[in-house]
Image (cartoon, rainbow, N blue to C red; front, top):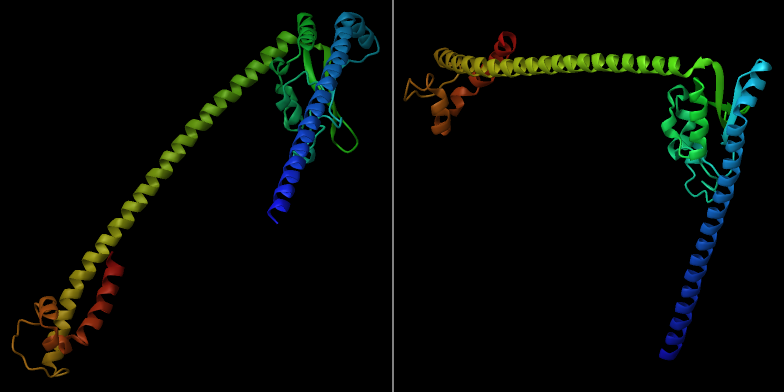
Length: 291
């Protein structure tokens, strides 16, 4: 019986090692495949952008002659190998993700559908050739504007640069800088107002807490004061009117009733059966209305 267990144990270990080896082998093969595809994709992109650099002047004039702005494709975003919208971003098990070469920062690619393209700047560029193209456009005092093309379903399928000779690089940069300064000043004002409002709210809350504490303190003071006198008065009246017949050994009991109620409750307890409940009710009423 022991030999059978050892044989089964050895077979199981061998099969587990074979599975681990196959997994590592497949992972390395997949990693190599992804790397080769990225290199191929990068080569194609570099050649495409180099063509745009070499023929920039000719292409710009041709498009202007047709009454159009020059559009230069940067990368497609409807590929199976790139993630660009929410439903695909949620699929973390997509093994085809990022097989293609990305010339711009991955965060821009991933969230391109949530970004205000008007405020994209050249610091998103990672590829040197694309940077050269961008600099070539800027050197001719034309502002390169990032644009996206959407399909009929509203999903982004292409990122491109729009080269419009009517948009001056210098003027656009100045306009963006001014707009940024205005927003920053507005943000400062908002923050100041927010701090003032926060301080005002905190002050109001503090004053409210002080009022509540004061009201509670007044309530307790009035309640105890009125309770003492009302219980004493009701006790004196109840004995004087004969409501409670209790032999009086000490006429000071009604005045110093809190003391006697604690120290001699067995003898004087019946004396306060009516006066204490009535005193509590009267005291609550006065404390509530006066505090």
